[in-house]
Amino acid sequence: MIAALLDTEAGGYQLQVVRPGGGRVSAVCSEASSIIVVDRSQARPVPPGVQLLDAFLDEFEARPEIAELLPDARRDLSAGCIAEGAPLTLRILRLNQGMSQKEFAAALRTSQAAVSAYENRSRRPNEDMIRSMSAVLGVDFNTLMEALANAGV
Amino acid sequence: MSDSLWSGYQALITNGAKEDLEVCARADRYAAALLAAFIREVSTDRGLLECMIDEGFSDDRVDSIARVRSLQVKRINAYRAKLISIRNWRLIFIVDRPSVRIGLFAVMPRADDYENNRSLWDRIEREFDDCGFTRY
Image (cartoon, each protein chain N blue to C red):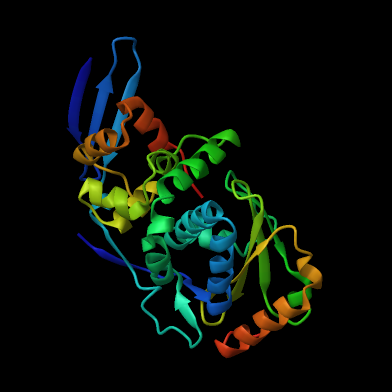
């Protein structure tokens, strides 16, 4: 197996892995991966009589009788997607580990916004992040690359 | 390194929907956990959130999205979501496009005849007006 880390014309990096059987796997870390996405949509005032959905879920999920069931619930959501014939995605791998985006981000020592961007393919993880994801998700490199190549919604 | 602004819908939940989830948790704790896990995915994925108000949408998680006729006739832009992994419950979302907000207004058993549930529609209409959503 031959691995090469190349500079790309776009200013990022491309990892090329040539396998003994002739296959080639590429991972690209472009300049786009250093873009910081600021989501201000939740920063606006909340009207009377309602609550931010995320804030409510923080409270609801923290209840011990709900919290203890959430990992299994997420695994069931993942299993449901697979049963429907969905292509393997990073989101499905994460849910299969019983993790929320927030928990996955903490395990990767990155932000939830970054995980969201990886799952929606608006941001490409770099080599170190791919290694971390592989370890946290308990999947091999090829499986993870397949998941990263498949789009979510 | 550069910054970019992501502008999307603000995701909200009404007191009525919160009470619905309490009722669900008392009746079926695991279903409540499934719903919480799914709703969290909706709240953290702007694309999926907008799918909740996209009539005809379906994917590996969502069975179908349809307009709620009983509310649409009142010019309330409401949609019900049937989910694949949570077969016994449905969600009702309402979008207020001028204020760029989407609210989760109800969580209800799928067995209920929701189109003829007068008290539910009264509650939703009251909360819709109270929180300043606008009729289209």
